[in-house]
Amino acid sequence: RRCREAYCAGYASRAGWDPRKKHALLRAYETDRAVYEVLYEARHRPDWLAVPMAAIERLAVRGG
Image (cartoon, rainbow, N blue to C red; front, side, top):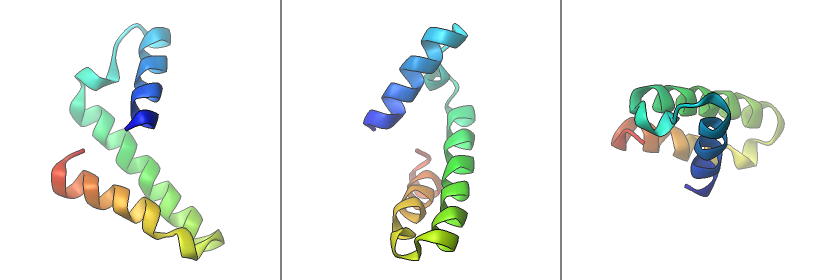
């Protein structure tokens, strides 16, 4: 949550609009990033794969 808030606050300050107000867009970005992380961890650190997989599950099941 802290990372999401920091990202959104920084984005809002530079872009002039807050991604937290576009829930579907923010969820799509987070899902894209989590899938990238799954592939990276699977290739380089399979022991850490549970971290991005948990993010994908959270985004899919609860919508964020």
